[in-house]
Picture 1 (cartoon, helix red, strand yellow):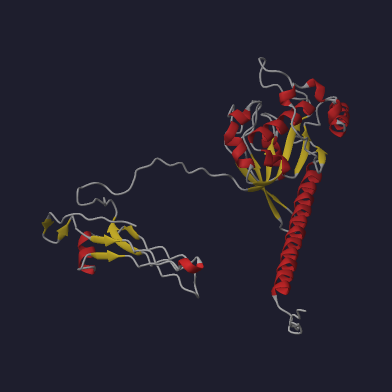
Picture 2 (picture 1 turned 180 degrees about the vertical axis):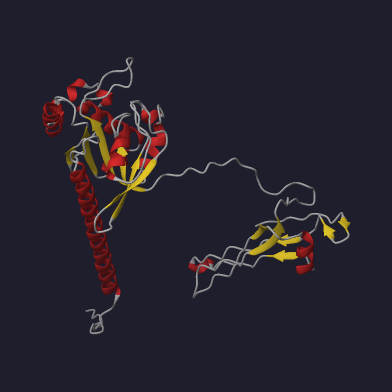
Length: 357
């Protein structure tokens, strides 16, 4: 509801720069207390800016200078919740200020932030320099910046995997994580917020491990996966429930095959290797990857298999979601029919008179 007015002070020929209006928001409707009814909300008065509007046009169009919103409907037996009153709009020029009789500006001033969370089918998760950008360039038509240093990706890059049957899957390359990202270290929340709006996660790890700098601890590929999982958990536990795949990158490096066999053994028996971590670094639950694919973003080893696994995983999850939705709808229908049947009296029921001795 808005109440505002200002005084007509100046008029130069046909130009008006100040206008006094009467405005009133609509009153609410009456309730129906005996039946728990609720009256409708009164309408609102909106001041709406228009590029080509002038105060003179406003005065000429509405000579009464009265703007009153509609009243809310009363509650009644046939409609216990009354309908809302009709809103009223005042078309005004851009740059207008709205004040009351005392010259006080109506409304409040706020600094707001518009914060976009990227929507994608697949979000690439990994430490800096794991090869996420190189991988995105191989599986899609995206051309992200690629360099041999940490934090190459400073903002999300979005690419699309194109399949022969014209199916498209969007993939987001997100800024790399570091330990402590949940506390906004490194790219921190700028990275983690985007994961919330991806359907599935694709972990990308360097088979040779990761070390951010000479002052930080070296982490093996297995340790990298555990720490990434913990960062997701600490930021928002629900992220761990998203379906996930694992791409083990840089398989073109020497000894990569031996290291991959060690990694697979660790992932199959994670509890046997968690003793190397401090207790507060161990996630509550380890992620079970739907597919684990060894790849090389340089030689393209495993790239086609990875693209097929991504599509298979998304299709399987979509089918699961559809089945779950249909089961829920069926259950609701069964419950609804059961309630309706139990509330319907039988036409064949005969009530016998009570006989007292």
